[in-house]
Length: 421
Image 1 (tube, rainbow, N blue to C red):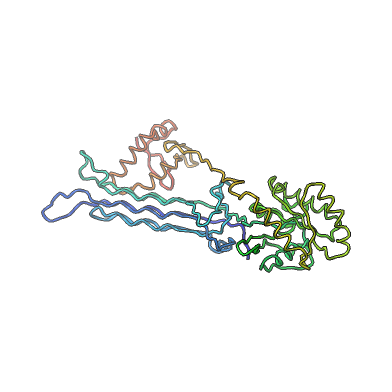
Image 2 (image 1 turned 180 degrees about the horizontal axis):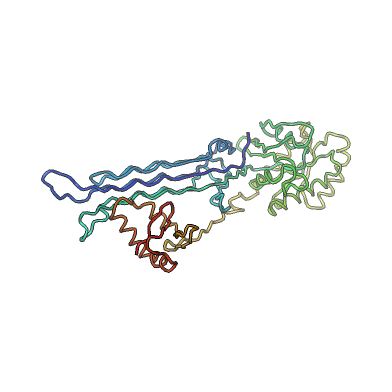
């Protein structure tokens, strides 16, 4: 089954905890601190696999979690870092943050990788907290928590030539004639309910990829018919074969309607190089009306020709003409260079204080919440270190100004602390 949209939850690994330990050796009564650092948590990385052409794998598996780093050991031994988790996606996958709608990346290149969640760094062992006034530090860090994101994946097929037109124009038949693709074909509209890809051989050294896009009807850009679910697949093509149904009541009106829908969805689509092919020329009534249609299209400066996909009349000539135009058309990278994504740099010192319904106070800050996650609350030295951080960032002063009094509850992330002067 062809699936071109999916939503997944990805989570990188937590860093391993640092260790509190002191060197023990015979005849060395006062061994110094030697607790090792924790290992890094695994990153989550999306990677393009060229042989994939659908997002169907994400129908059944929607959560991907990397491994956590290992904790530090004795004798300054660092914990093992976790392996990165690679999630394979087809070429043409566009990645968005599902919560904000922000574009994260566009996966088009062979073997392209995109890190979507960074693994947490390992916590530091107690040697890092040794000082001239603290020779026996009983303080270490817990590993940094991993990141979690909900991603929306959209697949835009990558094809050289797209075959477009109204329903029942003969697009699937033409694809089957030009390539080895075997799409469903029948004499009623919307036989094609999903895009089909095929590879056509132009000559011994040249092949092109063609895509048969489901038929366009009036209102398609707003989701009527099969709607914009499939219009996005045309965005990746460089040349369009616009197939007209020769037996339609008004093929030229169909042509204008299809171009209008393309333009409503994306103003750049009607600007793509097009060849207009009037299909079913093997029928006498189509042959009779062809000169008038050809003359009108020529007035508009549009390249056109007549074919019969069923009888295979001039289908090879159509392919060669499309391939010739394709050879003169810039690649997508030259036409549409990747748009950089600018993300505001978050101030690690910024925080807000909110009043909870139970009378407590909640400190909202990504960096402070992470610091709380990395604090071993059963170690008095680590607790004092966190208190100093709160004073240094001005959180302690801000809580007093907000009305916090001795014994009030202060919430930081998942932790409940008691406010003390």
